Length: 81
Image (tube, rainbow, N blue to C red; front, side, top):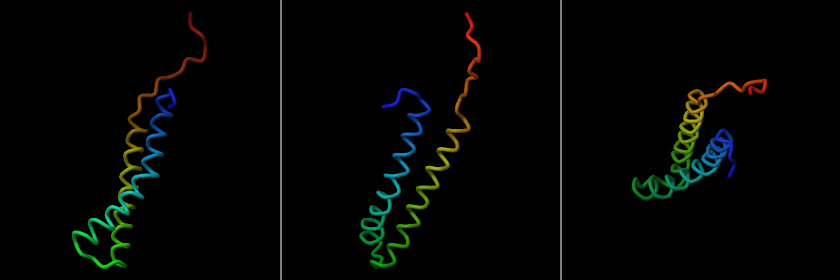
């Protein structure tokens, strides 16, 4: 794991961007739309894609919020003794 906190955040958001939309697509398609709501096989693709796109937008919004609220401390250019 990277020790730099900025890199740690970037790694977490990268993993979330890869895993969560794919998981939410297949989870919502098979269990929610086909299982609970009884949609047909072909129409459940469409609605599951909408769920995955919504998850991507939520993750991007979270990333932008974290990036703007991040406390950036100015790095001194000269060594202070």
